[in-house]
Image 1 (cartoon, one colour):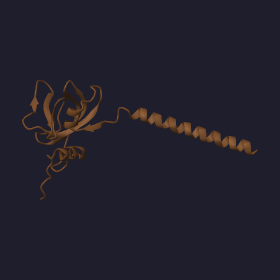
Image 2 (cartoon, one colour; image 1 turned 90 degrees about the vertical axis):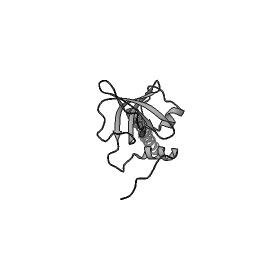
Image 3 (cartoon, one colour; image 1 turned 90 degrees about the horizontal axis):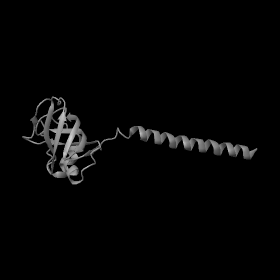
Image 4 (tube, helix red, strand yellow; image 1 turned 180 degrees about the vertical axis):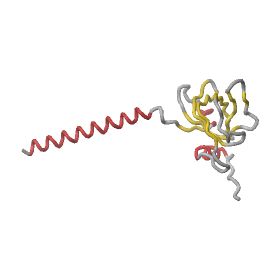
Length: 148
């Protein structure tokens, strides 16, 4: 009698462990394309990512670098004070997108240019994404917003 009870308990534990491992594997597989790592321009220049890798880049839009070309293609450079990376984007930029302002882009680094699929701009005068602030502080460029 004890042997049968013990055997059932072991079976339940094994099935639970296998189900947990399978669920973890499926969640990881489902999220593989949804995880985008953040990199500053200095990190991108120091260690260029693979062309197929999708990641986020952030910093300030370099002054004087914004070019609106033929059609919907926009070119500019994003900098963290230590390095700058050329960016191309096809689409409509957010209303608050401007030179010397914070931005984050999602896309891939191909042939020395970051090809963005999405551009996010700050949403008010004082906000800048934490990743961008950290990267700018690391380069010694970040300045606290003046209080009113």
